[in-house]
Image (cartoon, rainbow over all chains, first blue to last red; front, side, top):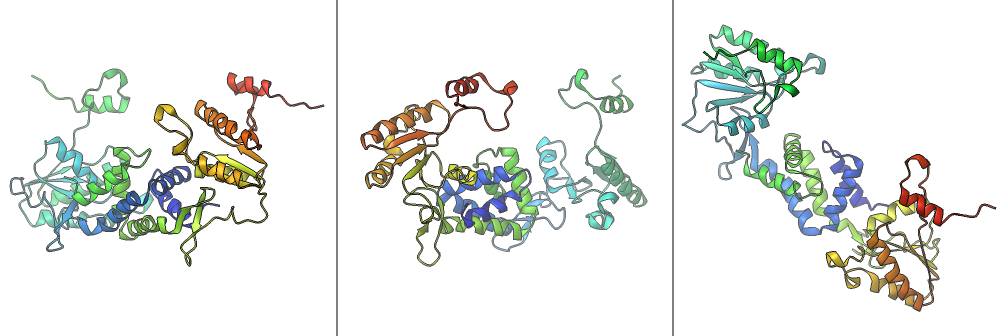
Length: 204
Length: 204
């Protein structure tokens, strides 16, 4: 009963993460009943996003494509005010955004594109680990800050990379673990509190 | 820091109902990182949906556009096996789908495109009410079944239309109110139970 053109749109929208069949139907109808202009605008944006946006071949972060040369132009890699002796390693391209917004890190980034996970068949060759080692081998890097999550796979990835980097004589650090800003002890979980006690800081 | 092409996509997705800024960001990144093919497919579908799908000029329901003639081809209006003496009036084009799926109605539909709502500035001239009266005046319709919701605005719409249709000598009915299928009394609300008692059916 639903016209075919709409059914195709519903099934395409239903492929998106977090969009179930009912949401896909609602969105498709909104896009159709909202008129040709809105649907065309979103459609054209989707057709052009891969021309305008790319991943930086050096750090792997999201960057704009220079419309003249057609090559990726990474604002972070090309910023001369940023330190080049410290690399911050993250799992996903999007992880760069909150870290950079914090203003606490002014070095370069390196996106792995995932984390080691034997259970999901993700090995070192599936990540941008070789590229990381090459960047360090090229010299100039004193410290690699591992900014991965606080789960088992992230831990494994940190230790794997740290073991290889230590052979290259580079300092490897990772993000501190402890209470988040604004947290009250009342609602903190045991694991977080345990880490916070273990890694307690000297005040005086 | 987010490339402009991606920012445009995020803001376009953020216009959709139920998609907040965080969901829009997640969807945009999924569409970008998922590769050019998926984004292009959804983009092209959006660009063509208004060519392939239309609203039937007679009943207002969703229908396919005939690729040869370019005119709307409504399966329901053109189905000779359906009764033409009973019209089912619904609020939205999508309301036709569950009603028709139920199999309990085999007449024609008429989509109003909304309900009367003075508070939102929706008057009779904003809905397809004139078109409904014209269809009835053209003859052949014996009964108009109002299949609107169970809220105040739907009630007002039903009574407005019923008053005018009674002058044309047409029977006006509305959907029964009562317990939904599979309901247990334990969880039924007072208003529903009240209506179910009021409209109780004779068994013997």
